[in-house]
Image 1 (cartoon, rainbow, N blue to C red):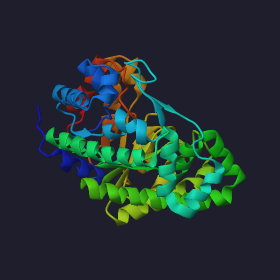
Image 2 (cartoon, rainbow, N blue to C red):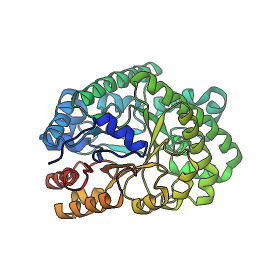
Image 3 (tube, one colour):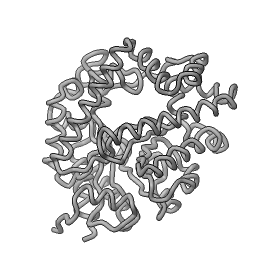
Image 4 (tube, rainbow, N blue to C red):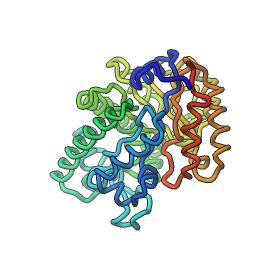
Length: 378
């Protein structure tokens, strides 16, 4: 059996730069599944930090090939999520049964009139007011929640490095501007805004760009890691036309990625939903300066055809393969991924979004085993 000759950090940096590596980066997003693997309830996983950390350690001990940790429990840890989570949420042990999966709640926290806050006081204040309303908290409680999130992230990064893993990303820089406003207004209300106040909305989206870049810079200062998470879902081709994406989505994404590239910050675009019809637009972003992460809704093989040599791609073993398929089906799909992406083409092997909480243990094993079988280049 071949052995690693690169460190986890060397491997992910080379992969993003589209350089040859000793083996593929193995970077599944593992969260609530870790608790099930360790035999604790989801309530314990999300509310007891020590048990959460120990369960992630157990997954790493079982599968040493897992070399890049893509999870940020700081965002899901109950005492943080219920105060400054990205959306209002229902949690196991509170609104849900002890072993239920947490849920995000879509609702209109900010009204159309609240856009004046964004225009007059900036994206930072808009975000703080959203958090106060989403979680029904005071300003003081929100600020304490932000502080706790930073403390948890520091501990989490220390644990990641202790396991000799790379941190797939150091910090959470937010989501693309379209999603920032959609999540605060609710999808239904925001899509109406898109048609009823298009010109004004474009001005507001530019303000959100500044907030995303500022959050990324602060994240680098706090963690020392120049890779940041930026999410995107709601303006893919699954939800809006390509014409509307080119007006309300792409210009702002391009601005953010370009500005971050100038600061040597690498955004990992965690883009859930189906972006297949938008793939060619990513050629407009700076080459080798970002990672496109896909969740299995997008055709990753078409993404490879279009973006090969332009950017690294992360993905994309689906939830269905983890939960209802056979281990052999997981193996066959992994083999197809590894045979498609050649060494030096920037492939980060991962789950399509997260490894589901109810994944079959034998399928998770097949996922990891595939790295040794097909993912070594040395």
